[in-house]
Image (cartoon, rainbow, N blue to C red; front, side, top):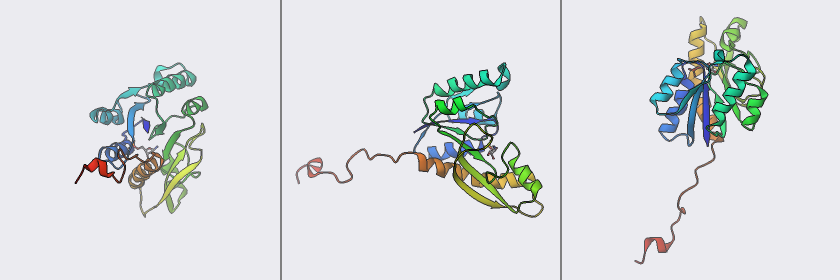
Length: 204
Ligand code: GRF
């Protein structure tokens, strides 16, 4: 399974995927990592890991449609089986998702359908919920909508700040993203029969 990961920021979720691939917990290839703006740490860490990178700068295009078309082309060039929005802070169009057969995975730091949008952690905290968490889902063209694949709850502590809560959610989110990708990656086929025939051992 080949994936392209899209990031807008630090890419710590992406790093969890890179690490899991590196130490063999995840059997897939990160074909490329893309960003919607220059200068992200997510791109820097991908380049350091030897992964091809690209930037389709939202601000360099006259409108969203032009940017979306450029992003679709840039991702398609790597022929992924699956595209992952991992802290990618842009909404893509239905055309983009269709171009990849609907295989567009998103992670969100709240228990969807509660608290969608760019400030899921802040909004959950402001509402006063005692439990929030994270969601991995198939994304459609809406804001954090589409079929849910996995969720995990995180209890909100006393005196919690947006930063402290988000950091604790991200610890769980990284694990959930890796385990979800593992469940979607087809199992590795053994190269040789499990029980070699006598002829492979030669005469005794
Ligand atoms: C994650 O919590 C993601 O769900 C949210 O932004 C955060 C990105 O973190 N949209 P990172 O860039 O992976 O460190």
